[in-house]
Image (cartoon, rainbow, N blue to C red; front, side):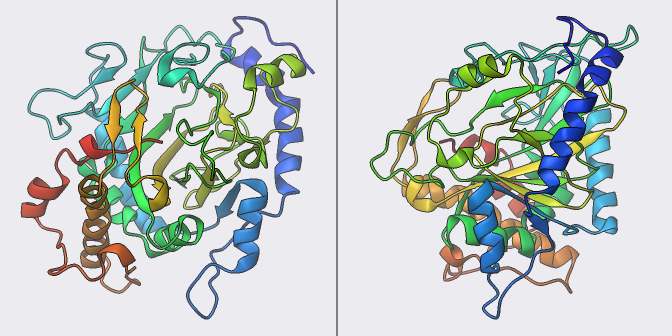
Length: 385
């Protein structure tokens, strides 16, 4: 394995990773966990797809978002990035310029140092990122800060709200988390070429590891819609099957490998328009994007309702929360709103029926009125496990 200097240039970092990336690509293509979304006579995901997901902990659904919709999504992401403040207001967060369409109760932007590792080896996110990744030196022309995440996708970008109502995406959610699945959080990961920071190795789940009924799906899953290609150099890497191993000693794994390049990991390889799903219990992370390819990923996560309802837990910022029925139902309303927004914009595409709200009197309709009454600041009701 080629050694990487403690503070390499971006070019040196990319060169040192080259062989590792190629080997990882070979491992990824050998897994047989990618293909189109195929349903059976009941409209449910076929059993071979579901089995492959539970075996490996992730799956790539190819070609789910078509080019016209990708154009809309990219345009709104670029508009939001163009409106970003040059630097965070405090810490690593910013709400956007006062009076802008991106100014909400919670921050709309999250920043990091170019090619840095903002949370690895720190107490942030409840210490779930125990190891710090190599931090290459960005080019002299690089800005002091780069946007690493866009927050609250559904309220900042109408195209993202419509994507949230995608029948294929929600059919996947039903298959993996049950027909009464509930949503919890939506963000955009931004990995600009030569700037995008790493996300050090971690497992997302923090709440249910010691539950008596723990299982491989206890902490739900993330969907990742790719607006550009996800490659070995700019994409997420995963330890296949680690979602079934309980809480993994990541620090010990990195020490045993001699570097953060875990030998059994595979990259999440996907094209623009693919929807990837990753179990939140999988060990995963990403290297700093020292490549020349941009990655923009729209994340949306889902939990089994039984894992959320009535649960009290500590959020990533340390505050305590209890997810009662009112909170869960209020957050689930966003699905109904998104489904209607999509149907209005794409009247000829299939419309998904979300079982928990199917019998609610008066369907929730997307309008400028519900933008203010239901959608605005919806993310203050995000849920974390």
